[in-house]
Length: 166
Image (cartoon, rainbow, N blue to C red; front, side):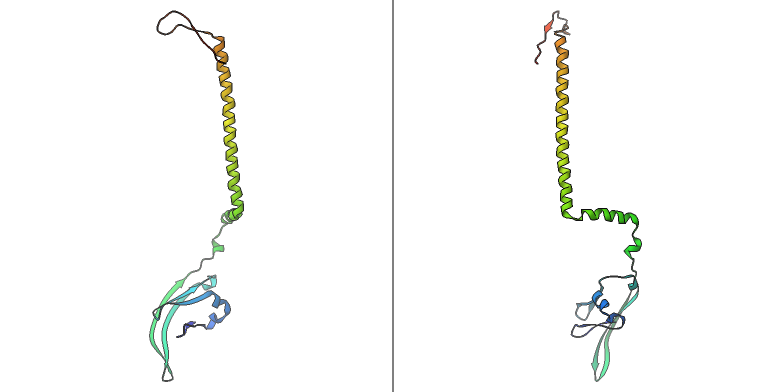
């Protein structure tokens, strides 16, 4: 049993009187005398079960305890353990991403990807420039062997001289 006194002091009775339960349970008054909230901070499989919340306003009147108002509600709670639902693939993914939790490792990884991108771009430009020079040399050699062009398609007779630039 968890009890809040008139002075808003929370008291624990029965199984909840141990210090471990006191650290896990919080009883708060949301609206004075109307709405209360019991929070269980860390759930355990032993917490599973049927809960009954009974709120009574009691006071001592003429040397006798009297309940002035009653309110109750019920709730059933099931606790699902994460360890029971985890599978080995989840553990592997968790271990993989645990490596990237360190900010410095992540920053180094991003910088390495950037440097590799710049190097790949540079190699692509060099590769294209080497092949474009070879093509221009091959085209120049073909034109130097054929210095004259056949007659034009208009039917005119004559030959034209080709000027080569090397």
